[in-house]
Amino acid sequence: MALRGLLRLGELRIRVLDMAQARKHYVDRMGLHEVMEDADGLVYLKAWDEHDHHSIVLRETDRAGLDYFAFKVYDDATLTALAPKIEAFGLAVKEVPAGVYPKSGRRLEFVLPSGHIMQLYAEKEVIGNTMGYHNPGVTPDEGVVRGFRINRLDHVLLGGLNIDECARLFTEVFDFDMSEKIVDAETKSSMAVFLTGSTKPHDVAFVMQPEGGRFHHVSFFLESANDVIKAADLIGKYRIPVDVSVNRHGVTRGMTIYFFDPSGNRNEVFAEGYVHYPDVPTIVWDTDDIGHAGFSQDNVMRPSFYEVLT
Ligand code: FE
Image (cartoon, rainbow, N blue to C red; front, side, top):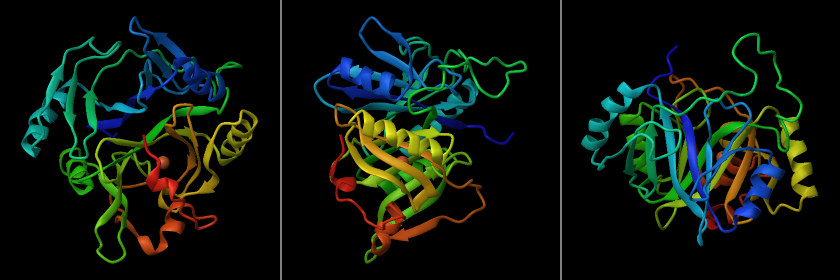
């Protein structure tokens, strides 16, 4: 199996303004599973078809946004090998001992040229998806798949400066591909870069913003476009604020809905999209066709897309 190195986006810590409201949104409405609350009041969540202990951590504070995002890597030797390469790229790497982050092995932490804190870890407690690993069948027990029927954390879109430098880190040091790119029609400078270390259309993306460290959205994968429509029904039922209702991205070809958590953090549910292979050239869109790149069914780019971040 060829996928080694960075495996996937494994964890995001999201800042929320009110934990009771956040719980209602992420657990009761969206249907993520709460697996733990720690002594500091951080709440740990997982989607049903993830095997590791958690993928989302919520932290209550007075400013919404993203504390950090973390990729899981294949094994501890991968972490050891990556540390000097990240340093050679020019980023200071801090090692965080095992156990500082609950249920997790040691981590490498560094700040991206876009201002975001990124971590890498190789180990996290495996709790499974409730189906086991021997004759598991195809669907878990009643009640495990619930709410928006979220399979797993899919990708994150980050806003900041120096997005070409971030792309260079991911492609040169982490062996990712740039699957797609949006460039300014006149200057050809990068407006957004989409990066994959797998066969997904993207695992992480960066969009140009005048200041660093901004959080555009976290995206959750649903099994089908039909599940996206069903999630839209629940979003309407529960009066969840919507940014863009059901549409298909030109970029990635994913079916999408953007909506907001009670703290104003943007969430996405996402299904379909193409399969990426590393021999496929980067797809380039320019800002002349930005409506189609963003929302291909009505070709309208919403100003909120570039203006509302946490
Ligand atoms: Fe997305």
